[in-house]
Structure formats: structure tokens, C-alpha cells
Length: 611
Image 1 (cartoon, rainbow, N blue to C red):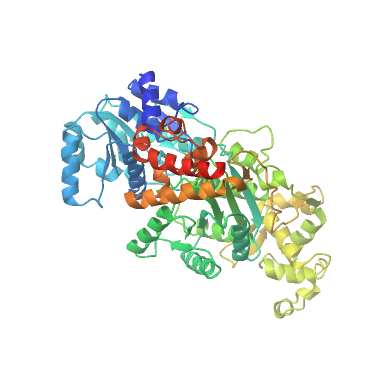
Image 2 (cartoon, one colour; image 1 turned 120 degrees about the horizontal axis):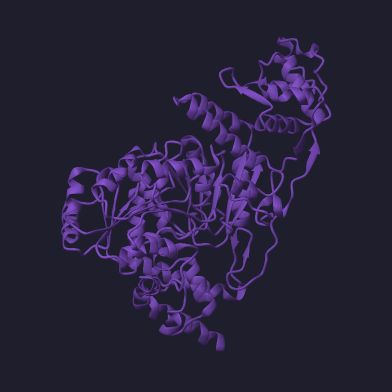
């Protein structure tokens, strides 16, 4: 069975060896046993069920939550000669009839369905009549009510084990902390499944988080400086912010498209299609966008607003660099983001227990933002994967944060909260500390307080930083029903009394450009793909040919060959079929379909270089 799986891997997918524990997972499923697989985005989860689907007799049923996700995988599979289809509401009736006929005659290797369709009695009855090789439950974290992508339809999937007791099930996800993992096991009835947990470390992603100061301008400078030729995703918290940001980026020379639930469905579909099909397109989106995106050459993911949890941040940033090549996760945040997220949480209809969990998740996200050391260490620690050494591939490793003794400033800030009656927000508190004679200060006679003017040593932006860090670290609470007024809590007592000191971070709004590190054809800056100067003409020619073939086939360019495979060609410069077959990602079907045209192109460049 192992030899058969390796042959499928090489001949169909074009890879010589399995990565990590892929081989073990595939063997487990082929032996008829259940498995739960946690593997980071871009880690190769899909192969864990696609290879068994080709090795085992029958049809594999793949449960997927979004049509876009199904269609993307089907495009990829059909391009390498695999018989893959999907049944969903967007498939025309006559096409559904054709697919069902092929299903009954055993001519489909993988059938993708949404959970709500799969669990209808009509669909289950059809599956009773065929040989099902396995059930693959993709995006399995959707079963968790603690997660950020909960789908109630996933709860019904536990019935599969009673209806099809002899069919192995494999559940897969890229995002799950301990609580979510346990819930997946319980809700899908996977108590006897072997659990495979890969590293959550996306080593190719460069993490960068800055304080927000004119966020859109910061974003534009980042794109122009580091990713002007790349595709990327920009996340915003509100629909209005999405529309404004997309319009503003377009006005400043970027090709940007909005995406959110308030747009007409056809417009969303059109914008998503353009993002997937075209190069150098930026999609500006709310959280409605992303789960169904399998585009491997997204070179950056940017957040203009603070995500509500590390799970959300990890999953969203994981959409960058799925091909394993360098990518950047960029974010700016400020005090208003913290207050807005807490306001959203407090105004929700969640139970007290769920609100408590949401609070813990937000606090963990703030800890990642405010840390002074390596960000990757904090990120991986959250997923129970301690990293002993600093990563060297985040902003704070490349350019360590400066800290200062903020004890006295913090005590002044806390005293001002107390003296003003714990009834005011940050802006007014700063006016009091700076000694400003504003109308509001005079109205409440705050010029008479002992804290009036005691903060003149610091600028307004510096005081905002002090208050943000005090809020983020839990020394003060924000009264969201009282227009954002700050309230003292028990944690601040030792600090106020002088029994505790506090180190604060020096705010930083921009980071120095990371120096280029020269290596082979795949050389890269931190978070940025760079092709050597002498290889650029061939690189662009390969990309043009790939685009032409994609347009002929009506598929995204990366479905023909992804950037990693093109870089393999750039390095090896194969001019024969045998040599091309050795490039990772070139299987037999693609070699037959495209090998000659790519070999001819590379040969022409080789001849020009020899002249």
C-alpha cells in the first residue's frame, strides 16, 4: 500500500516524497482507520485524503463548507487527470444528473459536498448504493462552538459513523487549540481516531505588527515598499472600512477590489474570481472572505483592524504564502481597536461562559501585539508548541523593541482616572494630564485637580501609548456603556501604591526595510520573493506562458503550475521531458499537457544566452 501511495504521489502529483507525517496519515486511512489531522495552511493537508482516494477502491466523499473551496480543489485535481466533481446548489440540474450517473458507475474518484447536502436522507441513500472509500471532513474546526467559524451543519456529521461503520473518516483543520481539538473529537465521534498534530510554525511568513497612525497611509507605504508586484489580502472589521480602503488604494495606484457580505452576491463572486484568476490584485475584505481561498501565491495578508483572537489571526495570516515561499503578515492596531472589539463582545448575545472565553482570546491577541520579544514564540506557545530559540523572522527579532520604565507615567495615568471620577475616556484624561484648558476641563473643574498638568513631560501620542498598554495588559477596564470611560480594577492597586513597576514599549509606526539575503533562484528578503536579476527575463517569460495556458483552460494561473514549481524550472532549466519530470510539482498528466511548451521556452532562452 505504501509503495502504491508513493507511486501516486510521484506520477500524479509530481512529488518525490511525503512531507512530515503525510505518509503515516495516508497509511492509517488506507488501513481503514479514522484520523484527525492538524496541519498548518499550506502544509499539505489535502494530499492526506486525495492520495488514499486514488489508492483505495471506490469514491471518496469530501465534506467542504464553501463552494469556492470545492471548486478550487476540483480545478487543481482535474488539471492532473483526477476524476473529481462536486454537488452543490450552483451546479445546473443536467450537470447534477451527469455527476450522479458517473457516481453510480464508479467513475468519480472524489466527490465534494457541503455538510447540509451530504446529511440529507436523499444523498445518504445514494451513497448507500455505491462503494464509499472514505469520508474526509475538511475545515473540521467548523464543528466547534468555541471557534470563530462555527457551522451548525457540521454537528450532524457524527451520524456518518453509524450509517457507514466500515468507512474510515479523516477530519482535517489548520486551526485548533486544545479546547477546539477536544470538541472536534467529541462532536465527530473520533474517540478512536489517531491524532496527528504537525507544527503550527509557518516559517516562511514574516510577522510584523505596528501601532496605528494613519493606517491607510501605513498600508500603502508597506505595499509600495515591499509588495508592489504581488497579490495580497487586506482585512478590515467593517464593511464601510472595506469600501473606503479599496477605493483609496485604487486612487493611489493599486488594483484593489472590495469583498463583504453587504455586496450583491454576483459582485462578490466577480471580485473573488478576479482575485483568483489575475496577478497583482489586492482584495480588501471583512472576515466573510477567506476560508474558500486556496490561492497559493498570496504574498501578503494585512490587517487594518485588530483580529478578535489568535486563532482568527493565525488562520487569516495563513492565507499568505501557501506555496511555502516568503510572505508577510502585516498589521497595525490602536486603542480604538481594543475598545471596539470589547464593545462588540459585550453587546453580543453570547452566554457568560462564551463571553469569558472570548475575553481570554482577545487578551491573548493583545499579548501577541504588545510583546517585546519574539512574536513567533508567543504565537506558537498559544498552540502548545513552545519555541526555544527566537525565530529570526519577525519584526521584533530583526529590530528589537525599545522599552522604558513606565512606572511613574503609569501611576500618573491611573491617578488621573481616579481623580476624574472614572467617568471619562482617554482623550479627556490626556487633556487633564497635559494641562489643557478645554471647555470640557473647565466644565468639570478638572483644572483644579492635583493631576492637572502633571503629564506635561510627555506628548499626546506618548500618553495614548501609555493608556493603550495599560488597557491591553488589564490594569484598567473600559466601560463600554459609558462612552469608553476608563475604570480602575484590583490589578492596578500594587502599581498605584508603588509596590510594582512596569516596563512599557516604545511605540513604533514604521520598521526599517530588512536587508536582502542573497541565495539561489528562490532568494528572498524576509517576507518577500526576489528573483535574481539575471533570471528575471526567463522568470517573466515563464509567468507569461503560464498565464496564456491558464486563459486557454479557463483556470487560475497557479493551477497550471504554482510559483514554487516555476522557481524549480528557473533553477534546473530543463529542456527535455525527462529533466522536466524531475521538477517538483510536475506529474505525468501536466508533463504530457504542458511539458513541451515550457521546455521549448527554456531552450530558447538557453540558446539566446549562448550566443
